[in-house]
Image 1 (spheres, helix red, strand yellow):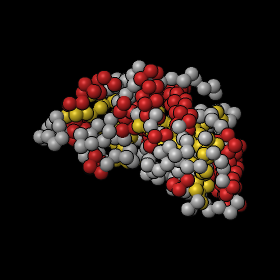
Image 2 (cartoon, one colour; image 1 turned 135 degrees about the horizontal axis):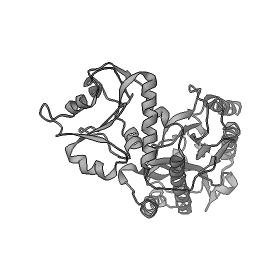
Image 3 (cartoon, one colour; image 1 turned 90 degrees about the vertical axis):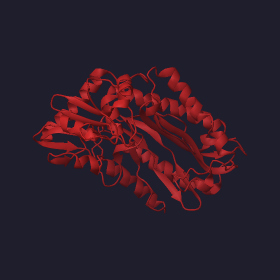
Image 4 (cartoon, one colour; image 1 turned 120 degrees about the horizontal axis):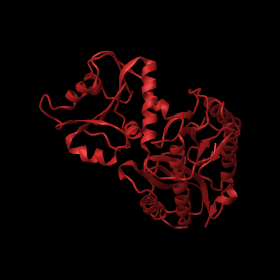
Length: 384
């Protein structure tokens, strides 16, 4: 599998049609007469329209022959501007609204009178309550999203390229005495620069990404980035992360780095993390089992005398920055070409520091391709 050229281009109508075809095939197999999608990420995946959840719902209803999109009247121009594919728009007046002009009235117009309706697990209780047919929860769209098309791979490869270059820019600003806030300040402008230059249909609603640096005192707490006013001081480990999604598709890159020198006590946990990383890459290929990769990483950590790692070895990317499938105990998924994963096994020593690299990685027919290539040895990650 060759990586398609990097692209931030808009999804095509045939691509959207193919996705909807797969949804209909899944519904037919499950015996559904229609399917309701509410998750904004799934709606974006199936329509190219990016929205956020508020009191005015956007509801996609997919039947055997038609795709209905229930939207508030005031959003019709917004939908028309960004949608790709054939949608039958059903508008409702407002929220709240009078009987006959509510979103629930339009839902009844779209749903067939007979048969079981499939609904996403993300559908809220108030939406389920408005469906009078029998319902069954099945995440049809999420399953389809697990294996990426050539278009999706090219979009994620573009996001990966932007993020890799943003990491380089950010690390160049990490100097003795520099505040974290100053070191990361150039990342967001760079994101906008690339999006505006490379993506003619750029939609700010489908972008949410950031560059972050954790000083050593914070690195044993993987998701604590409340350190913007902390200065960067010699030593380490620092965790430098670029993550999120840009113009509709997610990726991430992270490195454990050091300033001016590597403390002696940081070398062993760093090397253990790298052994887990090498093991993941050694096992990551079609036919491998995600849970077995995570188990092998945990075994390395335990053998070195460290506690069970705080998080799984990896997750996927797509129209989100975290999605299935996973490299984790409890999910015995078979890895297939076209899947994408973060490779991010970590070692965390409470009160002393955390150690984690992360890359965005495509599974190919014979192995893998790293979409975020960047040096990863500790000797190459000393900055001044």
